[in-house]
Amino acid sequence: MAARYVGDPRTIILCVVPANADMTNSDGLQMARQLDPKGVRTVGVITKIDIMDRGTNAKKMIMNQEVTLRLGFVGVKNRAQEDIIN
Image 1 (cartoon, rainbow, N blue to C red):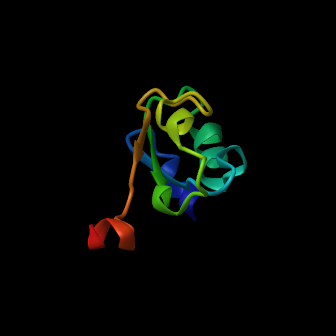
Image 2 (image 1 turned 90 degrees about the vertical axis):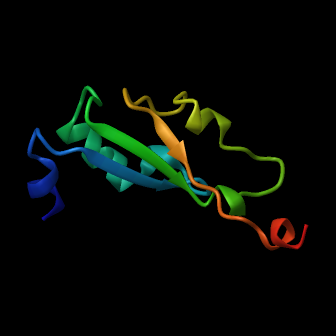
Image 3 (image 1 turned 180 degrees about the vertical axis):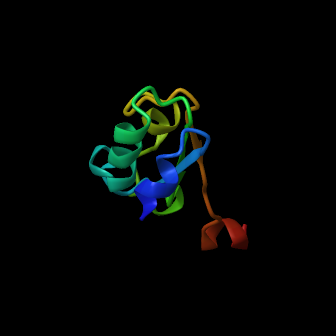
């Protein structure tokens, strides 16, 4: 069903990927790669940056170095309880 909507070349693909999982195995990115091989209409959104393990970061993902999209990636980070208290 999603392939029917995303298959239209006028559609912008918003591909949401969690930061705490391997993004290369993401079903959404694989579908976007099949339907938009050049990556000209796919925007990546990386979520759950706030719950990543200590010592890890999402810099390579956000800098478009792990999986390359022409429009790049946007990171979404919620405030942790520690941030709210401070």
